Every structure is written in structure tokens, then in C-alpha cells.
Length: 135
Image (cartoon, rainbow, N blue to C red; front, top):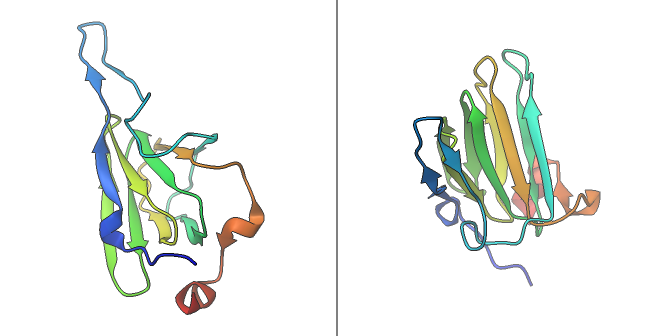
């Protein structure tokens, strides 16, 4: 049985930042994010006006970081929506399972890094919004 998740279960998490005159360093290890990372991918060269996401995961959790530039993440639990703007490489958005997400308003040159709790499994995706609402 799946426990209902809400947009309030998603949260911004600070990534430890080590400042240095030569440039800052941020590190994700141990307990920075609430899951073990099994896949890493990134989005870049997103054309102006294009959108990414448009799906939910049944079990997978994700952590999104704007390594460069900015973009909006629209979270939806079937009842509530919440928009989070990511624009700091030392802060990421934890998205729990069972949350619909859309990524929009990518700035020129933006890079979205995604750390995922599992490897790619098409069966874990809900790509139809009406199907998502019926779950």
C-alpha cells in the first residue's frame, strides 16, 4: 500500500558549502539527502520555452540542483501545487515519490543536476496526469 505524499513533503535542503578565495566547493555525502543515490543525470541546453518533467514516480525519490542558471519546479500532489525556483548550486530540492513535477522557465545556460534513489525503470513512471490523479 502506498502512503499518500504531499507537496509539503518536498523540501529545499542546503548543501554544505566550503567557501574559498579560489572558488566555492559543495559536497553531497552521507546524510545530506534522505536516500542513497543510485543514478545521476543532468539536463542542459534546454531551449527557451521548453519544459521538462511532466511525470511522477511511484517509488523513486529525486534531488534537483541548479548547478548553473535557474528554473522553476512545479510540484503537484493532486490537490495542492507549489512552485520552487532553483537558482543556487548550494541548495537542492528533495522530491519524494508520488509527486507530479514539471520543470519550466529555464534560464539560458542553466544546468539541472538530478540525483535519483533508483536506476531507470519505465514502470516507475506515471506519465499521464489523469492516471496520476486516479492513484
